[in-house]
Image 1 (cartoon, rainbow, N blue to C red):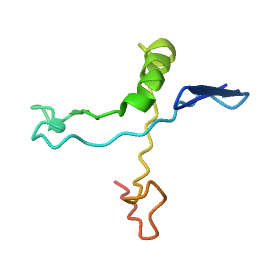
Image 2 (cartoon, rainbow, N blue to C red; image 1 turned 90 degrees about the vertical axis):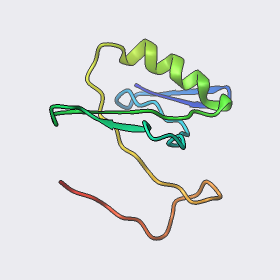
Image 3 (cartoon, helix red, strand yellow; image 1 turned 90 degrees about the horizontal axis):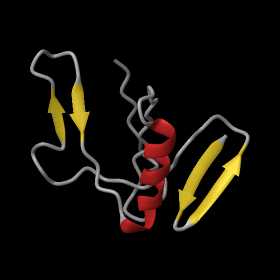
Image 4 (cartoon, rainbow, N blue to C red; image 1 turned 180 degrees about the vertical axis):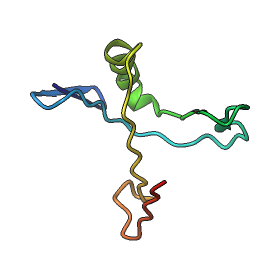
Length: 89
């Protein structure tokens, strides 16, 4: 089931559970922190007030579960960028 929160609307479909929201990396040095052992990392995101409802969905459906995270970088106008960089490790 896909759960998408867009400014107060929750759209539900029969797709695998997917929660979509807007976010940005905060302008702080600890936005991305690497584990001291080199085997993990932690990322902080700023979520606009219009998408905070998605965080409630994430907390309800994702707590204690393994999550697959995909980041799509958008342009200044919120649209897909024409020049994208894909990093495969």
